[in-house]
Length: 536
Image (tube, rainbow, N blue to C red; front, side, top):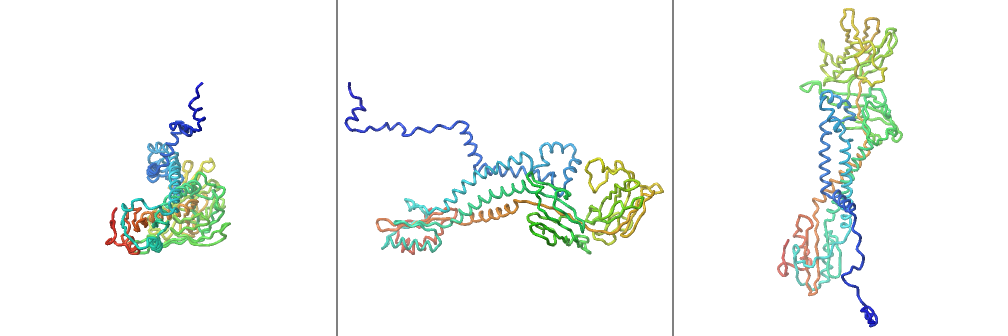
C-alpha cells in the first residue's frame, strides 16, 4: 500500500502547515436578528444627533405648559377651572391630551426619559475618551513633518543639545513635553479638552438635577395674618402641589410666624399709590437651624434648610366680631379680604355657622381709603378705612361634605337679610363702630385692621445641583471655544539636521511667534534653513 501524502511528510521529518485558507479560529456566531436590531437601536438612541433632536422636541413639548394654565400651580390653583368656565367646548379636548398637566403627562415624561438615556449613553463614552486624551502624552511626530505648519529643517552643531534646548524652551512656555532620543513632543491648550469634558458632564448633571427637582420637590402657598404661625405640615397649606415622589410625611419640621408686615406707597405725583417697598418681619424655628428672626422681601426669600419662603403678595385682614341673637360671639378675629385692584379695594366673607337662631354670613368690601359716595378706595394705604357689609342667613353648605372656599359664599340656600323697609340690609363701619342686624339676628363690630402676607413655599432638591451644573457648563463651554490647542515637534535626523513643525488642533492657527522663538533658540532661521515658513 502506498503511503499517503501526510505519512510521507511525517516520515521525512517535514512539518505540514494547515491550509492558509482555513481560519485559525472558528468564526464567532452571527448575532440574531433581534440582537442586531437592539444594537442598531441603541447606537441610534445614543448618538449626538438623536440627543439634539430629543432636546429640541422637549423644548417644543414644554410650550403648551407656558401658554395654557396648569393644574397643581400653587400661585394660581383656580386657573384651570376658570379657563374651563370660559372655554367649555375646548377645555375637555385639551384635558384629554393632558395639556393642563403638561409636565406630568406621559408623553412629556417619555421624551424626558429618552433624552436622559440618550444623553447618558452619548456623554459617558465621550467623557471617557476626552479624559484619556487629556491624560495621554503628546503623540509622536508625523513621518512627514514637512507637511505641517511652520516647518523648518537645518543643520546644527550638536543635535542632541538642540533637543535639550527645545525641551527646556517649550517647558518654560508651559507646554506639556514628552522627550525621546530622537524627538521632542509638546502640546499646549489641553484646558480646551478639559472644558469640553466639563461641558458634557455638566449637561448630563443638569438634566438629572432638573429631573430630581420635578420628582421629589413640592410647591405650596399660604397666607399669614400678622401674629399667626405656620407649621410645615401638608394640612397647613392653602394650596400644595407635590411632585410625584415627594414625601409629604417627611416635610422639613419648621414653624414660621409673621410678626409684622409693612408697606410703603408713593404719596404724590403721577406715581401716586405705586408700591415703594414692602417687607415681612418673621421669626422661625426648625430642628436643624434653631430659632431666628429675619425680614423677607420680594426676591429675597428665606431659606430654612432647603425650604424657601418667597413673599408674593399682601393685603388687609379686617378684625370683626360677630355676635348672634343670644349675644354670644359667633365669629371673631382677623379675616383675609382679597384685593381686587391696585388701590387694595378688597372682598371677603365671614361665616358663622354656629350663630343662633340661625347660621349667619357676612359679605364685605374693605376700603383702605374710602371716598364718600364711592365703593372704591382712593389710595392703597390706610387713610380712611371703611368696611361695607351685607348679611345672609340660612344653610351655608358646610355640612354636606363638599369643599368650599373660605373667600366665597354658596348662595343656593341663603336668604339676604333685609331691613324694615324691605331693602337689603347694608352698613358701612369704621374701626371701633358696631351695627346691629335687623330681626334680632345679632350685631357686628369692626375692631381693627391687620395685614396679611402671601408666601410661596418651595423645595427643589435638585436646584443647587442644577445651578452648579449650569455654571460649570458655561465655564466648560467658554474654555472649549476660547482656548486654542496645538502641538509642536522637534526631531533630530541622522544627517545632523533638526526639524521643527507645529499643528493646530482648533480653528486658530499655530501662533507664528512660538515657532520663530523656538527656531531662534535652536539657531535655525528661514534664511539658512530649508523647508517652508508656513504651510497649512
